[in-house]
Each structure stands twice: as structure tokens, then as C-alpha cells.
Length: 186
Image 1: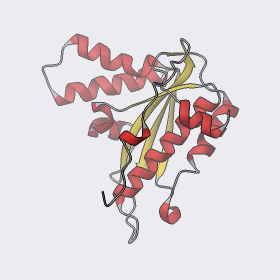
Image 2: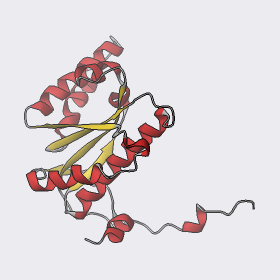
Image 3: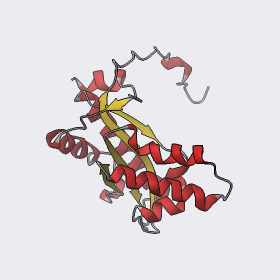
Image 4: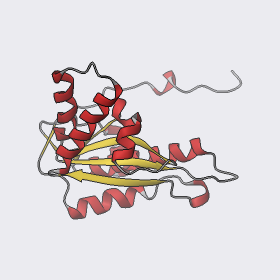
């Protein structure tokens, strides 16, 4: 797929099934991520892959985090938390690795990690792999971060759910560029 086609037509695939991307596809996904904008060449990111039975372990971690936040959690909410990682055969946890640097603020490093996540999504789409970026409360939960082995200088940017789309992807609605671009001074 042409790069501009991928940029102009990429859409999320929220309903995913097996198979997950194969080894060669994953190599391209992560190679694309490593080309994200990176002021200072800090490589302020890392990635965790979660698949097979590890998805169930992640679901238990999500349920534990939910319980730790409130004693008033119902069984329905716990079941939902446990099922979240099971929505796709592969999850990629995108992590910003924040470093002290005199010219590259931490916020810029988080944005760079977000660009790496977007590069993974575009590379997935270009290869016919379905993917969707999700965050939600578990992305910002300290217990989840600890359970995934993040250091105090790391934070989750998002969970990329990946697999084979269950149905044909929608065609994105056209957007008017002029609605979002203006000239300064006006």
C-alpha cells in the first residue's frame, strides 16, 4: 500500500480475531515505530507484547487494579476488566520512557512515543492487519503500570489491540481540511 493511501484512509478496526500479525509483520510494525520523530535521538519508548495466556493474566491485573481503586466494584465490572485484553489476539503496550534532557522536555518524549504508536498503526493498516488504539483508565492506573514492570520514569501511552478484522473496514468520512487549518495572523 502506498504511504499516502495509508495516511489518508487508515481507520481503526475495533473487532478483531485471530490470527495476530506474524513474525515478519511484527518486525515491520516495530521498525516503523523506530522511525518516529525523535528529538535528541533518545528513543523515548519501549513496547510490550501480550498474547496467548498472558492476555488472561493482564485481565486479572486489570481486575486487581479496579478492586484496589474501590471496594464497591461489582462482578459485572470485574468481568469486563478481565475480558478487555481478550478483545484481540495481540496487544502492544506502548510505553514512554521519560529521560531528563536539557533540550527535550518530557512532554515531547511522550508525544514521540505517541508518534511511534501511530507508526505501528499505519504499518499495520498497510499490511492488512487490523488495529485499534485504546487507553481508558487502565492506561493511567499505577497498579497496572507496576504490574507491567514500568519504572517510575515510564508511562503507558496506549494499548494497541491487533489481529484480523472481523469485518470489512469502513471507509472514512471525508473531512474538510479548511475546518482545521487557518493562517496566522488572521
